[in-house]
Image (tube, rainbow, N blue to C red; front, side):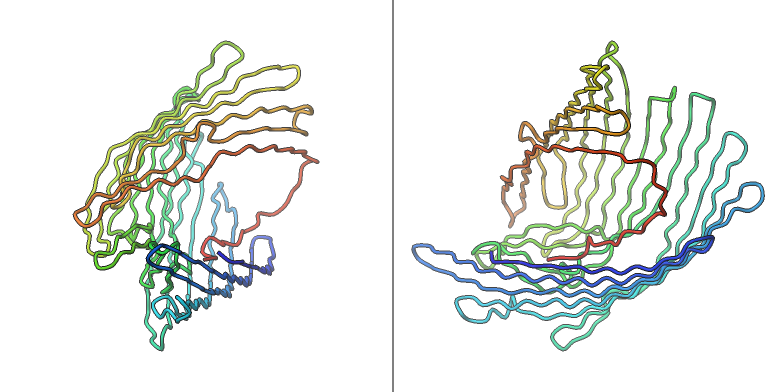
Length: 424
């Protein structure tokens, strides 16, 4: 793998008061050079590739917020975003141009949205907030002299939050939310990147945005025990899967949209103390996952029940010196993801926390994945697809953090630029 370089420049203008206005422009540039040689007794393969990505993104956001009589807080606004992406890759295999991995593709996206919402306290028991967003999206791709509309249409995104205080010690919380997730710009291109002589990563220029709808209800008992139910529904769920070519000795990874991805579950949070020196919190969750879709020539419709257990512990070593030890553990049972069977995994972490100046200075020494339990293992077992994969990357880490708080700072909320779609 050769050198890579990337850069990002962002300019943002904003004004505040009852009417908040923001405008921003982001330019992102990324270039990567790859040189790979595979030398076997009976064959030798040499791959050279240069790939580039340039992104121009501009957005405008306007929000109006006001409190009316009797505590009605109303907000409404609009947002518009335009993006232009230029992806390209030039690949040579054994000094000859590899047309299957060479491409130049331009994409334009248009997004416009309106939203309105309110929040209100009703008496001493009920707090309610709700909002509705309407958004229109369009994406147009220009590649190899051909233009086509990848997606075009509108969607609604409702939000609802309700909190009801039964009595001073017990509370009911209900939440419904919705969101969207866009595929990475590079994943939407016609790229073919070589991992080795056998494996590739391929783009998918027909990926569509993912929509997410989430519902949750929590009951808080005695101000500390939490029992909850939840359900998540994903439309056009985006995940990367692995396929072994049935016509050639090669395999590739590709991001696709699932027809269905649902998760239903229940959870419980049980805090407890052991003496005056140990404070613990036990979290147990149970899940039912449903995945359905088509990947190349494989149809899948899978369901799986599995669970997750977590235990968080804080040991007070010295109250006088504000010294404590945190030891946490998590175990996730085997699950599924599309055509994958995913083995269970676990994580044990520990941290030593010292606060020599309370609320001012803190020092933390932390270790993650101490027992190497996060190593991912997946299996595929279909008539034309059989594989076992273990990722041997070492996820163990040790970090030292020093934090000093100068004082209270009052600053307006800043809307971060979403860079999750950038990069190759």
